[in-house]
Image 1 (cartoon, rainbow, N blue to C red):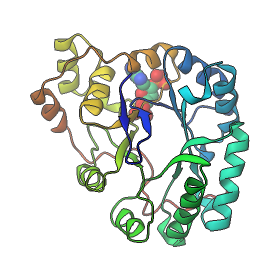
Image 2: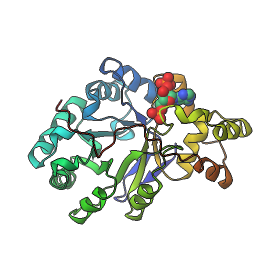
Image 3: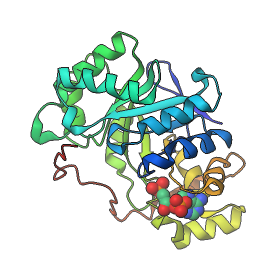
Amino acid sequence: MSAITLNNGVTIPQIGYGVFQIPPADAQRMTEAALAVGYRHIDTAAGYQNEEGVGSGVISSGIPRDEIFVTTKLWNADQGYEKALAAYETSRKKLGLDYIDLYLIHFPVPQKRLYAETWKALEKLYAEGAVRAIGVSNFKFPYLDRLLAGADVIPAVHQIEVHPTYQQAELDALTRTHGIAVEAYSPLGRGADLTAPIIVEIAERVGASPAQVIMKWHLDRGRVVLPKSASVDRLTENLRVDAIELTESDLTAIETLEEGLRTGEDIETFDIPNR
Ligand code: A2P
């Protein structure tokens, strides 16, 4: 599977299995299934409340720990220096792992004015070797710039919603300008972008499924992609994209689908459920 090298030299498999909305009771089984079909990168979060199952799946897979890339994220209620350090340890223990590959601030929660301080805690975890890389998620303008202004460590990744009908092209470009890798969540538009006529036409022409065409578009544009599926067959389909060839004109045709159709939380109004 293709991988990219982050700004600190760590390599990350370019396709990861996103476990948002996978119920806790299914998380172990689905993680094991994803690893069995070839995924080597799992993306969870404290806020998904399924870290225990994900960690159990990683361990029970029998695959050497250093062959699996595990990401988790700091929940909004845990922002602040001391809280963030404690939250990391809670997540690590729930996962049952000695270390986490990538730890992200899940949302900036600008109302709290704590993300710069929270970032200092992540920098400490990184300096101590508790995590192999640190990053942020959902830091749209101006929050990414503000974080960078006070940062000693540049985030290795920025995880944002990106799919054909919501590309966040400016934020994607700003992120890359700083040498930060873009990770796309809801890469298929939660399934809604799969029926766009341009996608269907390209899929028929290149002999792939619509999901595979969108996956390949992300990969060709250099993003890490985090598709979700409750079906093992579709998980497998989303991983088997290496042989698909898209032309530059296919890629730009997909980019004409931009409609500003955000499916996730609006970070300006998304408040802090204290769970
Ligand atoms: P399902 O769980 O039934 O497979 P995103 O990753 O953008 O959030 O999209 C996830 C949505 O896309 C889910 O509804 C998922 O449904 C659907 N999906 C994922 N992979 C495929 C695929 N290969 N073909 C069709 N639908 C898919």
